Structures are given as C-alpha cells and as structure tokens.
Length: 154
Ligand SMILES: [Zn+2]
Ligand SMILES: [Zn+2]
Image (cartoon, rainbow, N blue to C red; front, side, top):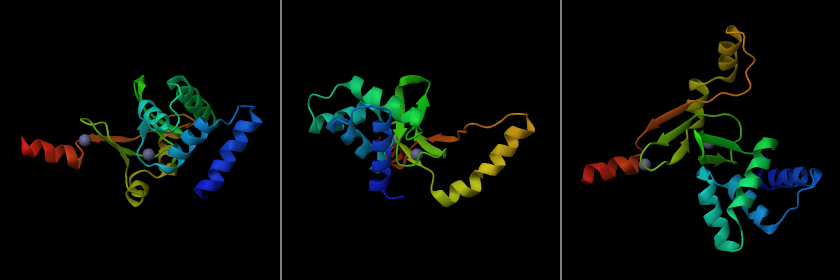
C-alpha cells in the first residue's frame, strides 16, 4: 500500500470515530507514516511545532493513543511512557536495533528479519506453552556506528 492510500485509510478511521482531523493531526500522521526514524512523542512534537507553533504535547499524546488503539502505530516502549518511540511506517511486529547511548532505533534489515523471526515459528513457541500469541517483541541493544566512532575519538 502506498503512503497516500494508507493516510486516506487512517483519516477515514478517524472520521468513523468522529475525531476531528486538524492540520496538526494531519502533520503528525504524515511524519509517522513516512519516517523510518522511530521518533519519540517529544521529537514528533518538536517537528509539528515547527509548522504549527500552537500544537500541544497533549494533542500529540492523544493522537498517538488513538493510532495505537487502531493498530496504526507500533509503540516501542522502554518501561516508562515518556520514553516510548513510535513506528508508523511498519506496524507489523518486527525486531529493532536500539542504541543504548543515543537511543537511536532502526529496523533490522528485512531479509535478516525473515530468517531471524518467522512469525509462524514464534506462534508455535507460544502455542507449545499453551499461549495464544497477540504480539511479540525482539530487540537488539548495542552501540550504533556513530556512537562507536565517537568512542574511538576519545
Ligand atoms: Zn548511538
Ligand atoms: Zn521499526
């Protein structure tokens, strides 16, 4: 599905739930659906505020909560809500590489993901323990190339 179709679909869902589609909300949707950066709510807020200075952080959180409920955004949480990062580009559960120093989050390359985690395989693991799988999460923590380079310069 291309980005425009996806945006249209999300806007329809908002309308169906009688949420107002404000320009601020639209800007948030556009950033989320096109960016592979896995931004936090605070980072999303900064970007939207650059265009719409009157936007509130509460609006960003509320819109993210609605999107999450619709299954249109993936939340990558670090325990506390304020630290969460969001992936609206790929909303299927997928592994992430997370830098423990700068908190940069990137997707594991797709072909590697397929061999690493086959959805059916993960489901089978859950079923063997008598669970019905709802979601799964697999993250790799480390230092990103930029942070490693910085370390070498010290
Ligand atoms: Zn880093
Ligand atoms: Zn991702």
